[in-house]
Amino acid sequence: MKQGGEHWQWNPDIPFYLGVLPRRGASGTNVKWFRAPNAFPGHTVNAYEDDSGNIVFDLPLTDKNVFFWWPDAQGNAPNPEQIAAQLVRFTFDPRSEDLDLPQHEIISGVDCEFPRVDDRFVGRKHSHAFFNVMDSTLGTDFPNTMPKMGGGYAPYNSLGHLNYQTMAIEKYFPGPTHFVQEPVFVARKGSTTAEGDGWVIALVNNAATMASELHIVDTRNFGKAQAIIDLPIRLRAGLHGNWVDSQDLKLST
Image 1 (cartoon, rainbow, N blue to C red):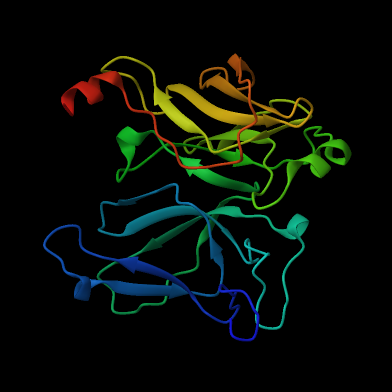
Image 2: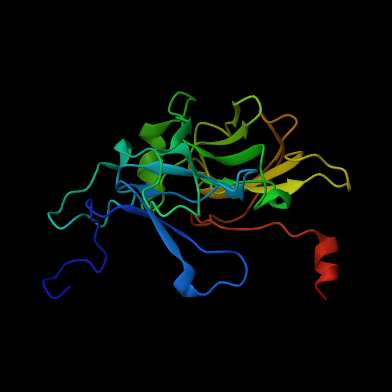
């Protein structure tokens, strides 16, 4: 910073670290830092402990600097269109004294980010995940939309639904001038609702109208929206929201 540089800087030589802390009865000194070759981790899908005591951890991962506006010490940064994250899985023993993570497994090569699961299965084995997808084959009008987007938020033109049991990915494409924000999953009402059965809600920016929309997609019919709510304003691209059931709100009071 004294030399006029940015306050953040990408270092391509630092490993990717994963901190593990016992869930109960632990202090900060009990954390174990597992490591893997340099990479840029995305937002996490979920993590759980399998029957053998191993941790299973899913997330998008790329070998490129996603925050390309903060280059490395030599000023190197990838072109934004070269950045893509694959969905990967790390499976490792938290009791191990070998802190080098095993090679990750590639779950899907689709370019994705901002994954979510059915919140009832956070910390437990999951069978469904929902996320943003960039698929250039879907028909987005890039020449006319990209100049209107602005920067600082990677463009994603569709929502994805991964069924881990079949490994099939369904996509919802909102339109040629639309870009999606982080999805939120809402379980269908009922005490016996199966995992992943419900609704996916996402804010969508429409570059043609320069306004935002709220799209609601049924997970039983993921290819089209069940409802689109036009908002009278354009919301900046954002992330991290949650759905809270009215019953849970009552229990919190």
